Length: 212
Image (cartoon, rainbow, N blue to C red; front, side, top):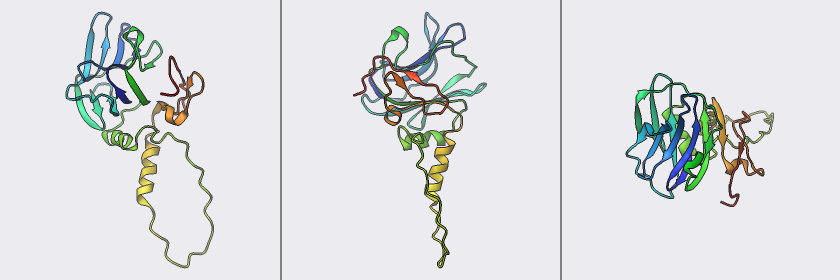
């Protein structure tokens, strides 16, 4: 998730484990946490204790959880924190919210993009997303013209290996993508924010300003 702001939840959901609320939280202590609220207390899964959040500066946070392994939290492609316990399976029983969660309030800032994968992406893939910026790999591909048939009289130029690698990276980052929301790519459609993953998980906009 690409975020810029000062405090409040970035996103959250109610899970099927005792009605607990899973939250991705930018706290007022300038640290970023992934945890859950039991109804009486907040329990941290993994914390970015060294995050030193800089207000009003774009940053990309990534949470990676693999069942039976430690959870990982990254900022801008750099590992910030590791959970003390192994991840367990969770099922969402209510709609997932981005930018707010129930009565806690809305994020004080902006969110440029959010993605969800059904697989654990690796650190290099996270760095590719960070270096590519919001919307990386989500924009529609331009249709390529069919190659012109001609007789080569001189040796063919070397292939553009860098460009080929970039295309492969973008293709790989669509594997396992189950939700991707980026207003700068999809635009606004009334109260609907289109899911760019192709899975049809479109969102409903609430109290959003298209000009901001």
